[in-house]
Length: 90
Image (cartoon, rainbow, N blue to C red; front, top):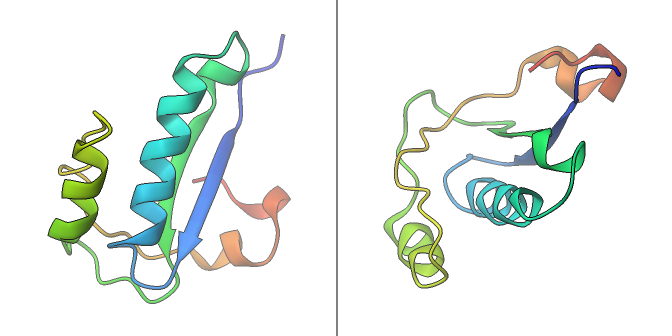
């Protein structure tokens, strides 16, 4: 069996939408059978500044659902990830 892949979630600054989507998706995948539960969810932003923290409102919103995204730091999208899924190795 081949190694599980990854899912890339992209937004602009990587401090609100994509960290929330990644947290929700990873939480949902954890309840699925293999190979889905082994998929790696990567959150990134097309204009992200490396190391920016996730917005407090995003952290609080998911905390209410029992999902902790407080440790996520913004990460800019590597250029190859924006040209197509086969060229991204996040």
